[in-house]
Image: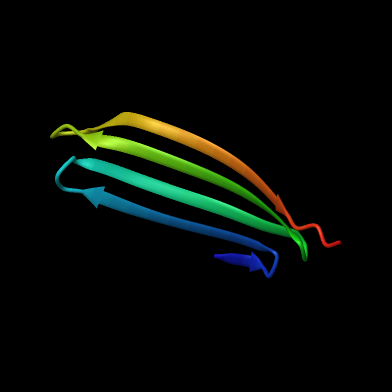
Length: 70
């Protein structure tokens, strides 16, 4: 989803039959400068135990990327 040319949000969900894991990933990208981006990524995993999903792991990442021109 693009809120503006400088702000984007992408998400996807996947299920693995072998390990019975459900994973979700959401990434926010903000281009605050032509040479700079800020990324915020959230990953969530849950395990299928038959009649319900149980928490497996969460991860929050923040990345700042900036190019220096000399």
